[in-house]
Image 1 (tube, chains in turn yellow, purple):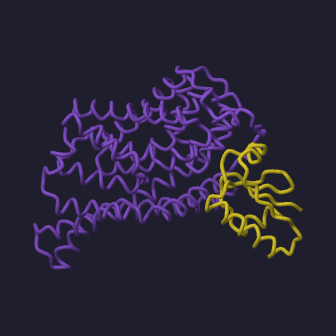
Image 2 (cartoon, helix red, strand yellow):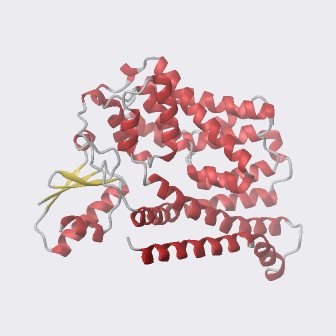
Image 3 (cartoon, rainbow over the protein chains, first blue to last red):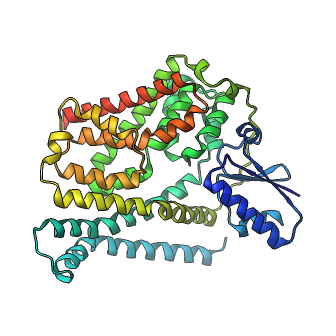
Length: 76
Length: 340
């Protein structure tokens, strides 16, 4: 499983990355977390609000700082 | 969704609003009681005047803020940048500018997303001038500012702010569109490939209410300190600055409006922090047009925004963008100094 955090480095993007790491740990998954920070790469997802979160290349959430619980819900 | 859950939501909402209203209405007497009976301060002193102002305004503004942010959070759950982009894509210039300025009010927006939003709009067929109308209106016509103005000054000032903000956004975007500035957008923007975006799931009401509550937690949690600082400064001005002092520097002289804009642009504050200051300035004889121009310059134009937009706009277009909007703000300032 591959989780991508889309964001150019705003405080919320960093928080979202942390939450994703915690969610992965809590569920005991072996998932790779990648930060997508290049604006041209972010645009390929068609995302206009950061931070966004994609799982296996599909955007699951846009412009929201998800909680650990919410991310868990997305990963199950 | 079954009826008992609905009934629970409804009961809580009505009870919440009733309590909110009762507390809100008794704030003035609580503030007077606190200042003069509990703290035993003398009537008419600088300090007691400042303290009473603070004790009254701080909870009042925060309560208004909570209610409004909640409401706006729900309204915004109906609008997303994707939907706005679809509406604006391929629109004719003038109609597009009007729609963009109006959608700028209700579409969720944060200046940190200005760049992806700009690219997303431009590369999917939204004209440059229309995109800029959106980018002017989104921060400047701010729902928090609107409701605080309504709460502190009444509906007339709030309406003036809303209408003039939208008109500035429409006209500035239209003017820049007419100037044919497309080649002054950074070249890489046009080469960027924008994906199709995200399929949006239709939300149900409990989800929208949760979004409203999230917005309250997020926004009020972030801005309350600025509100208190703003009210603190406002209280200082209210208690210590002599009556009509502001009339001399923020009055109706010809240079007061450009000066207010010049001071306002480098300043960056959110609407919630600036409005208590605005209120105190008006109370001390500053002219409405001058104060309005100052406020719009602070909220609508800022150095951090310029730095963010420099990534996608070449310097020349960026300067023209700021100049056109600043000119619009000054016109509004002069207009209201003239008629009020």
